[in-house]
Amino acid sequence: MIYSLALLCLMLYEMLRYMDRLIGLLKNVGTYSMTDPLTKLFNKGYLLKKSAQLVEKQPVSVIFGDIDNFKNLNDTKGHEYGDEVLIKVASVFKNVLKKKQGTAFRYGGEEVVGVVMANLEDTAKLTEQFRAAVEKEVGVTMSLGVANSEEISKVYRPRLELDTIKLADERMYISKRTGKNKVTIREEDS
Image 1 (cartoon, rainbow, N blue to C red):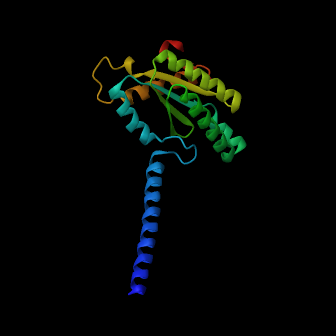
Image 2: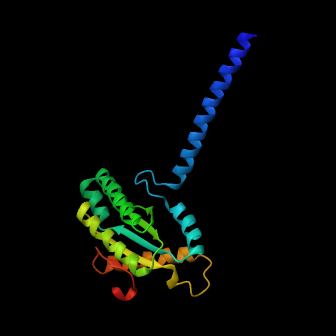
Image 3: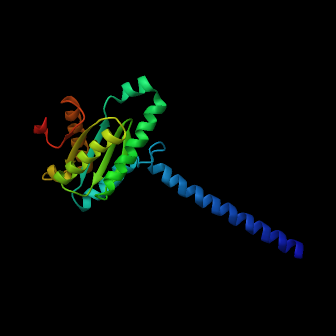
């Protein structure tokens, strides 16, 4: 009887340990499904989900950035160095966005996106701080575009968050085409 009771206690103990480990693994799966493993920024999938939620509640600004000449950097200094640059840029981005309680995402490749609860002009200033900090602290330049959901929400848009991200992306390409290492907030800035 004592032996059976001891065996039962041991089995319960092992089962609780297993359950605790399983819960920990499930928490990690949730985190990993939302974050980029290299930069630890939230990923594109989470960007789309989160921005859709936020834009329903209030206007949001989107920062879309791309590291200039990144392919050349990878080709000349190697992919490991490129990864280090991505990690450093992500860290600077997170720190700058904290000032406005913004959220940083890795869109893909060398592209990052930020979502900020601020107007276009305040977000443009924040984006310029980010651009300058990356140049100073990481030693690379970035082309960036900024858009605000209020710019395009005057007409019914079922996917306003996607339109805002797309507009910020288009403005980033204006920065690329017109000299790189700058922030574009309007098409006429080019």
